[in-house]
Image (cartoon, rainbow, N blue to C red):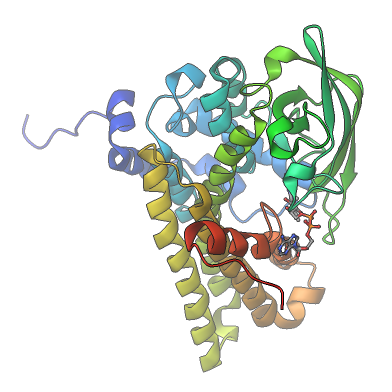
Length: 396
Ligand SMILES: Cc1cc2nc3c(=O)[nH]c(=O)nc-3n(C[C@H](O)[C@H](O)[C@H](O)COP(=O)(O)OP(=O)(O)OC[C@H]3O[C@@H](n4cnc5c(N)ncnc54)[C@H](O)[C@@H]3O)c2cc1C
């Protein structure tokens, strides 16, 4: 027999050590599986429907082993690093597919769990990766958003449990999350960031009640969560008692940096879709310039974010510099959605078509990009103080 012999498909070990081989194999899969069409160009009328549908996509990616790269074997993964996760999001978006929504919070909550509570990660992260469950992040409170160290939700130790009382606010996916990673106060009221502990709390614990909060779009993206003497096993502490601030700072660099990369891949997909939807209607020369400006903002974000992903993959601490990625993300997201609002014109407001409804909901959500994960003003203060080392402002 003559001719070439196709090389064997790379095994898990090869893909874990070679991100570009992983990219090639993933791209080939995404281009060949017609069942993925179910998730292309879909708009879901409710948050609950969308996240449930996305969890099905996630479970398919898990069956194919694709979303297990980038996570350690001890936590249900197949090895590799942050670059594998970045490639997954990149290739899904390039293939016209959504990044499954549970991955947003996985990027925020997964790394600190692996780092500070490896036993919990071994027990619980495989379920998350399978799409069987997703979690929420309970940091903010009514009087503690930008000033997180002022939080008051209290956990007192009682035997083998913590007893938690208080409230969290603005919990993304709070209405459907099965567990909540919460920063709570175990020290004195005055202890600020020194008296905090991170707990992973099951949402169905007696004493926990969740009230969904509808956004302006009408979607229940967020929730407020109340704790009324909820008993949480002490072994659910993520890190040391009193060490919650360290865990939170580690977490925030992933929330700001990996989330920015993931969102940049989605922004590129949405810009392409907008170009197709606007199509021949866009005859104005200025429209091309606007597209180019938004494209440049997304590319600037990706250039910066790719460097951050490489640094995280090498084990470096990104720390306050992740605020640069966060600021660039807010610029790209608001620009993209303002462009859609302008170019879709009357359709943006009035059309009942799926694509218009999706842009409307996304436009509303994009307004939050300068608030969530730390407001734009706070990010700029972090950059001024901790990255640029500018002198403190003095009052006149
Ligand atoms: C869509 C969305 C999703 C969210 N998801 C979550 C989540 O999953 N989990 C969670 O815990 N939280 C979440 N949040 C909450 C978010 O982290 C807070 O809204 C954010 O940190 C700001 O806090 P705040 O809303 O209390 O506003 P405040 O802290 O009261 O700030 C109000 C205004 O004052 C400004 N400001 C405050 N302090 C300063 C300062 N020192 N210098 C300059 N300006 C200042 C702010 O920039 C802002 O403009 C989410 C928020 C949104 C909008």
